[in-house]
Length: 147
Image 1 (cartoon, one colour):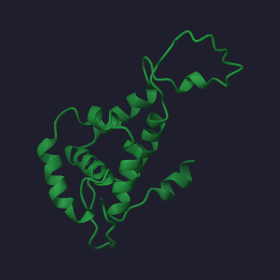
Image 2 (cartoon, rainbow, N blue to C red; image 1 turned 90 degrees about the vertical axis):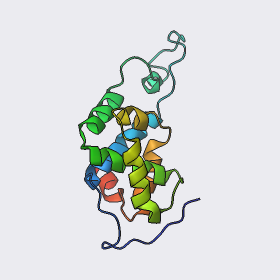
Image 3 (cartoon, one colour; image 1 turned 30 degrees about the vertical axis):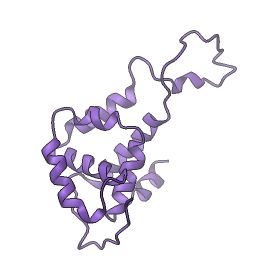
Image 4 (cartoon, helix red, strand yellow; image 1 turned 90 degrees about the horizontal axis):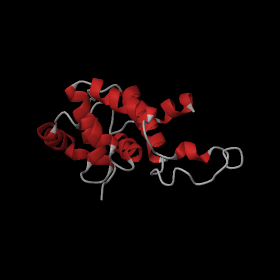
């Protein structure tokens, strides 16, 4: 179980990814989290009657997934490593005080499949937000401006 460790501006780790970019990825990952696996393509549903709920079904091309994947792929290697580190912290695998060691592990594990790994992780948005919070950052301002 992770414990929150109060971080001041001086002792919280400096991210290689801009906070706004990390928050945007977390924000877009929430859209991925609400999607459902594609099921019956011909369920007899009428879009007018069901408020177009089928838009939440996964299937075929997903512009949100493509956008998040492209954004992660375009990050520097250090930015990608920070995202993986934040996710690992946020899911409770490590404590905030372990940032350097966790980041080193993420660096050792880095490969060209980082975007697929992150986007394939259920609850990615929650993990990124929690990881940021553990080291003293918040996406609250970002979410307030963009909701």
